Image 1: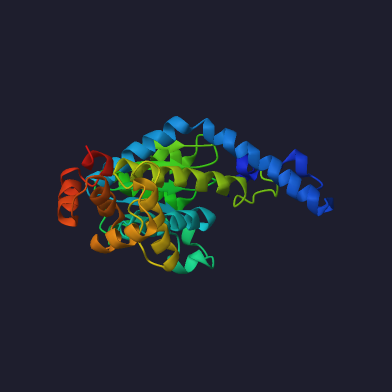
Image 2: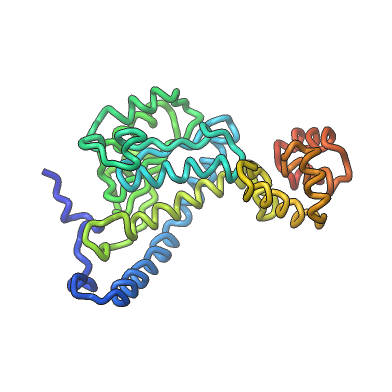
Length: 297
């Protein structure tokens, strides 16, 4: 029997012992106050997050992938971050992958026993063709989920860089990885409910890793999403807005140039700022490895 009582994420919060007697405003206030501790916890592990960003960027540059593995809330957060990368950064769906114990159905309904499997994650990593160029990031608030432990172990044996994100110090998953990121967010407002502070911390760290790695591979110009995919009306308008902001053109010109650039914002930016046609802009981008700032030099 695993002793969860020794985990910080499972301990009782002395400030919420009368949670069931609090008024709505008291509940909101104490949760808000406790969430403030997440920022401090993450600040203490920024060097480790920076290392993960560097490794993830290197993996993407060499044709590898970012692969998240997790169970329950942690797994869902990994899947969420993965599926948001294609529309935001214009990358293929397979560049950032989220694996959750129990498969896609587990995103909306728990699959009993899946997180306790010692073989399932390795089998799934094998099935998606894991290579040493990939980086595998294991997520578990408790830091002891077997699905993640054995997934990280499989990835290390395959020669991958591995990162573990837990909200307990000296975690079991941290010992399996090349790099441990362990923001200690403390006892939850609702005892053991790690979808709260621990979940918030994991979500924030994943935001940093995915966004940071995309910046490293040239998916951002200034602070603009210049590889945004125009998959709906909102993103069509956003693409125009990005081009107008980056170049100072008006909306009419933005529409025209984006059409000439086949909707590719990066190409359109270079066309306007370098005063060239689409073909020359594409060539400049190719030489610069897709980096707009470099292509404009």
